[in-house]
Length: 263
Image (cartoon, rainbow, N blue to C red; front, side, top):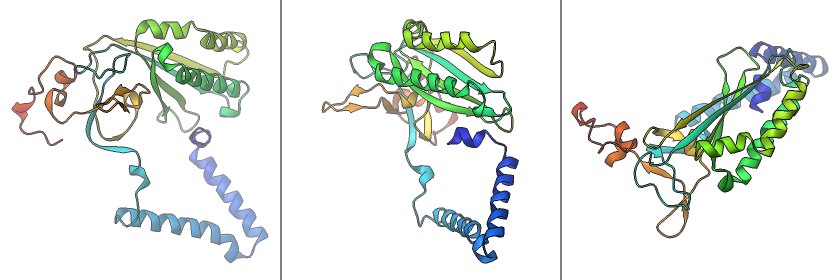
């Protein structure tokens, strides 16, 4: 839905709404024609006010993890990490954009989007075999008014497993399709970037945040009672409090000279 919303500028959506309102005014008595727009606006204003007062739940806080957390990578056998950044990680950024006047309705874009989605579905299905850790999708909404670039961050346990995916059958099918249409579809854009961080060279924190990036990993670790847990840890105490501690090269006391941490 958000991809469709991004396909048109705000001005286009306003004009579309104005046309629909005009048609309703021609077909219905004025009080009935205005009722849907006035009713919806009133409902949203009232609901927002009630959320601000704490009288109704705030859906924007759904799935938000309060506090300061860090995401680590468990061992392949599900064993908890021994310290921050004790595993390597490889990251691939995949992105696509339609530069056609029709945006996502341009020739070839549906096929490109479908192949894109199939790649991610196959990775999720075969995560343990492929070393796939998870992915997060982003929209680069600052590029232009509409039809912005869709970007996906994809995480792997190692550079070798990322390379194996790149030359595997699912990616080869997408690769071959692209080679067959690129000369006739210059309006379609694709890109990728690849980064490899050895153990001890990456870290992260999330403060009052939803799961995104490597925190949305599909990897799980063994809990004390045999349950499978997300590898999220309290970054407000111990070695994980600081940048160096999360890199596995500090004791968490590096920032004490700045005074007591507020989070």
